[in-house]
Length: 471
Image (tube, rainbow, N blue to C red):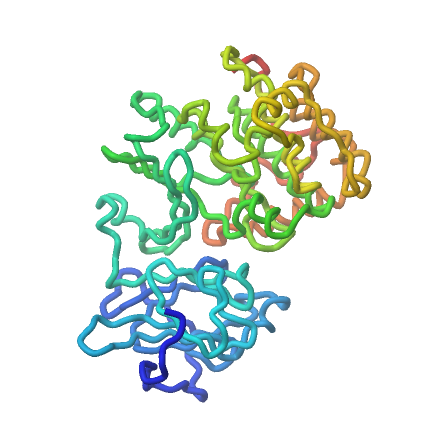
């Protein structure tokens, strides 16, 4: 419903002279609340809707955006009165929630520009963005259209479940908010029956979850909670507001080499940590590399490192077109029962390749792709590669090697000349100090016995490499 006639509009006008601070009702005092706008952006508070009408903008609005919410690049694009949300009654029908675009630069509902002066029904899990589809701010939750019955009590007692973030072989991922603190998190819902999960072994499930719990690193998504029910497993992790590296590449094209290096270095540090704990990821790809914020200079968060072992081996190769490129040659051999941690280093090389050119190194029919991967046949031809440094290409060529024994390990990767960059190390230290992902849950490395400077000092790393035997 893209347009609503003016006769349906709320009779309450804009209160141009009234300025009310951001409205946030405590989570345990929700009487009279008919809707909630959950924040999907750091420094933006949750808004609980009680009155019939609310205005939002950077001027005199019921909910005011300021420099505390947005930086100087984004804030000027937000109108003084950007949008209005109203709860309206129509005849004898149940009330509806309407959003109206009042802005010059657009109010986006689920990535679609509403258009100035136009209205639309707002329904559960609709996402609201300002001035650009990438500047996401809120997810709407209608308290009278609660889908909590879709989830067991042990889940809804702790979390408010909202929009779907993604769907995979394991199940789905949903954005959720912890009751009381309203901390954002991502809930991976694993379907026990009728899926590709190998969840028959209860001890195996327990072991894998304990593995996830044991990991604590600034560039790896943190496990927050696990709820095991008869039908499903709910794995709660911290949420990353910047989305997947895959989506950023699709939306913006290849990364500048400095940005690709910045992300790759963080990723290599994360893999160094996992390998030091004798953990092999096996499924490193842009979909499993999350970005903490929408900004270019942001921290990365590696995810799904423990769940690949719970899935059937073939599931990795069928997720979407191109995923097979990230799988090391030795994993394509179904007769190979053992492998080393160097399978992750092949994947790192492919991620770097794709980040720099925005296309897969192997592009052919399935059987031909397998042949190309097994023999590491790829090239740096094309105009785009003329703009990439020889050092970056050299690192790729030493990671994407078909013979594992000749492939760099993670320590050798961190010592490669391309990564010996003082500005790069300083940027990583700055990101660690800012810790942008979860201000309410900041975890300085010093608290875990690891100094920031030791983490980024690849020549004398404090975290040593793990064992090198076959896993």
